[in-house]
Image (tube, rainbow, N blue to C red):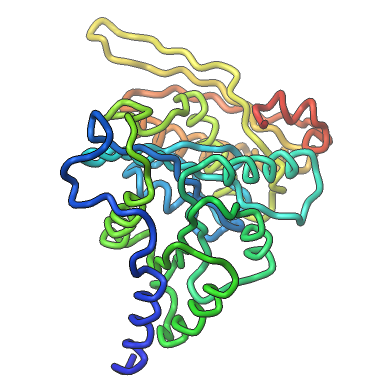
Length: 331
């Protein structure tokens, strides 16, 4: 990028960022009795723009599962990062889409709509340099009274940086964003910079969680998510997005030396017999790989030995059945 184009980009970023948002001073005296800040931050965007990757980077540990399949995230997942006197409570949401009109999809979209109206700050995530009708549908959900940051993610994949300046200008015309944040969720310096930007918008109040807590989700929930991630990773686009995972048993056993063993039984639910055969694979090899990788990751996350049993069952039409959708843990 030549100097003139780089200056244009810098000038536009300054235009979007200059003197916007509340200030938290220099970290000294605060109006809060405990001198603490705490706030809820929603991460929203269309499917596959990097929301879950961003959440995991901010929390510093895997909380939200990722895959190339749309709407891998299906629940409102809370990730917590406590830094200094500030507690950041991030909410990862499903990707909002209108491609499918099933009871499951309606439930996921309802989760997104509920999240954007009940937070202190919104991170609207898009791919840097891109804005599609799917992005526009999510943007239309943002509330005027809640500050929103434009997170131009995957900046590392943009080869012609000079095109970012006019694109940012066009985004400024679409919505009154509090600030522009071009970044990559995989860049540690960008994550650090984002923390500093978000902190200004969080209210002075006591923390909602303990200093060492990373999520409000249980290990049982995380187990189902990890198995589902591996399921999608090993089946790719072959398996419809309506497949899900249900935890049937989650029990702890402790040995004489107080070592922990988690016994987990999970059922992979699919809609057709053909899908069941696809998940199991030839001579059960695919299901075995899903189970092995899920078990290994759960052992890393839970810091204990894990015994994992997987079953595959057919429940035809479950994604269109509101009662069954709720019974599988969706709101």
